[in-house]
Length: 353
Image (cartoon, rainbow, N blue to C red; front, side, top):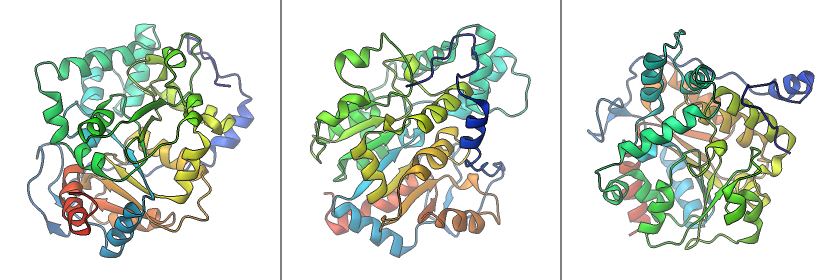
């Protein structure tokens, strides 16, 4: 059962030795060096040049071919991060900096989960940052034609793929809407890592315990919100405490992810779009969910799109080897650059039209 943490941020009711033993297997990620990286080739000016570097290193052709084959065979699972929204909403680093300034954050490291934790404690309400980030998101989309933005984002291409399962760490419903705009009939489900006796998702059947009652298909895919959804602040994994609780609850109860999704993660190719190595959501995915899956029978690759500034000069070769231990190939470029290379290959193969 999920741990019931109080608003005073009391310690979790788990033996410290158990927590230490379980979390000791989670490797510390490399410290991100904020230095502009250079790639092997120029592919053009896509998206906001202020947000990402403009040079990329694509996947090896063999990795592209393998990924395309698996997608064509309906054997691919897609993970959707904030970068896939392509500027519709502010990025986590921007929010962290704004909050750090507004609330007098005293530390030098301004990662969103750390700043959000500080804001929660300073406000006296655990879910104050959750409430504030959703208010900001809503303000951001006032006065814009959201469907047009979604159609022009990388989400639109992802929605066209013959995929039955989309896992997202985003709180918004943009991936769901992209699938609707693509003529599909998606189902939304929310990971039940938290405790909320008044959870509206229990009443409307959108939390993960109801997921076993459906069979996803290409026309009726599932969008699984791994880190919560805007409909319930308590479901959102945002603060440092939230991430620790998610990890601890995952160790205690891996049924947080329904069995057929676990099977998909172990047996299909995985495509991560819109993440950064500095994102806590990305690190938790790799060190808890992904590493915990039975991957001995995975025959296809994992492709990860990462912004090039995540790797300083000289680091990409090392990081590529690090990921390759888990059959992971890295596309060094932003989400739009990835889509610009991905789309023509999909068109040539006849997977999308």
